[in-house]
Image 1: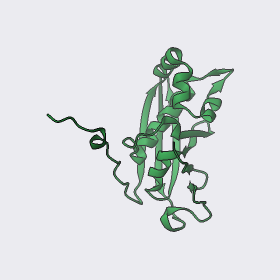
Image 2: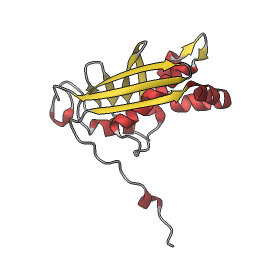
Image 3: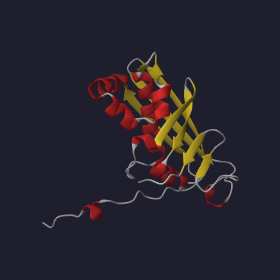
Image 4: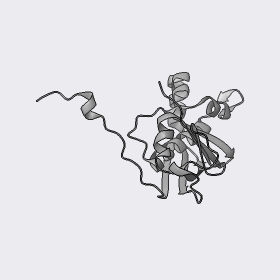
Amino acid sequence: MPSAHLADLVHEAPSLPRAALRIGIDLVHVGAVERSLSDFGARFSDRLFAPGELRDSTVAGRLDARRLALRFAAKEATIKAFDLGAIGLGWSQIEVIADAPAAGRVRLHGRAAAAAAGAGSYEIAVSWSHDGDVACAIVVAVPAADAGTAGGAPAGASRDELRYGVGAADIYNEEQN
């Protein structure tokens, strides 16, 4: 049997259809996050979370596993909503920002931003909750009423910055090394 080349096994994610309602949901066990923090420490937290997420998840000088679990669930829900699983992105390319105790917004960077931008302009809502050892997040992305300028970029957005929704989600295109 001939050996496969890596290039033959890698494929691009399918292009996302424009103007489609997108929904993603995920559950995370808080205990699993606690164990990962205990076993791997900063290797775990720094790899999965952006500096702002870590700052917002720190309580009394320690990372709060419940807050990290909520953010991780929101990251997974975002991946599902925009079908980003096949593009090979780093976890910190999806940054979850808390706007309220049970809701937030998502800021996408790098490949995640590029793939989501290809789907058009969206208003994105993130809601999360927890009960005992389970954290849950849901992401609902609705096509924006005003798609803005050509290519889905709202009027006034720079070439390198696309804002999706009014304060709902920030998507930044950044060059990746």
